[in-house]
Amino acid sequence: MCMLQVSDELTPLTKHLASHPYGTLDRRVTFDKKDSAIAVFDTKQHTSRISQHFGQFGRNDGEFYRPAGVTVSNLGEIYVADTGNKRIQVFDNNGVFLRSFTTRINGYTQSCPTGIAVVGNMFLVTDPVNNAVNMFDFRGKFTGQFGEDSIFERPASIAVDRTYGVVAISDQLGVRVFSAKGERRGGDIMIAGHVGPMANEVACNGRGEILVSCWYDHCVKVYDLNSGFKTRIGGRGEWLGRLERPRGVGVDKQGKIVVSDAGNRRVQLFDPRDRLGFCRLVAAPADGLREPYGVQALPDGRFVVVDNALSKVFSVSKSRCEP
Image 1: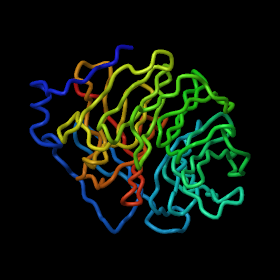
Image 2: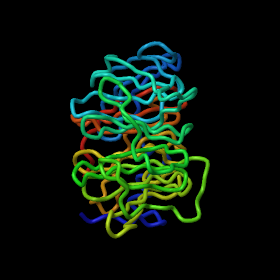
Image 3: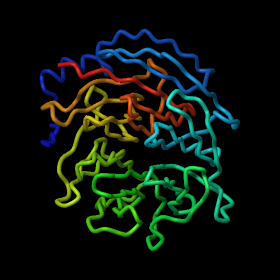
Image 4: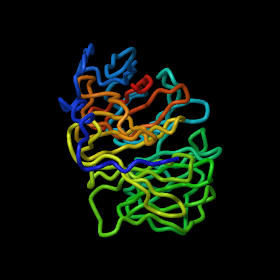
């Protein structure tokens, strides 16, 4: 796969598309700020519309308080790290609440579930407050800690490459690489010279590459497991194809890269096979986004996007990229 090195200069086509920070968009969306709901978007070209929503701000089942990470099981169930409520909530792919369980385990008086990923018949949850990555079965039973011999510095994001049997975990110092059994592997991605207040988000594309969403560098960096740094996508700016403090990053089954462009309050889709890289705008502030955070692809092609500031989760359907 040929990865794209995105130039710091806008091409004429990029400038045309970027005549407005969110392009020339015909938004047919209404949004109720009191709803605090999970919403489902259907998208066509560069427009989106809400087709369904569920949930609200709070502490009851199906409600959220500053959620962060999200993952999707092989059955299509949506697992949300409900950070402020110190729990994991599980929904079916239509947003129906199924169950929840606490992350205050192992003697913890506090918990801060942030990142979440499925590994085999269990899932892993990062807890930066306790500097731990905890393992649970699908009933929510705590089964131990992942990478027990490792010392994390506020671990935040976690991603799994099922093809290569790799687990990537980010903390404030960089990204560490493990086998699915929790054994350390060589080739840790240490971001030289950077120790910041937030760890970067990570994703795996199933091709032996790790994507690192660098909030401080306003881009997504692509690393090969064997050869190291490969390319970068984005760059600071408000125009389409540019990023401002990006957070979550994910990969769909076609290999396209979806990025929560938190500083610009939008979600963008990139196609690394295209010479321009930028593919389409998935959702924007007009759709109700304020601070998109974790993002994952559903088996049916939709994206699930967590909005940390609004305590919401959005499910966004994507159309094909424009030619």
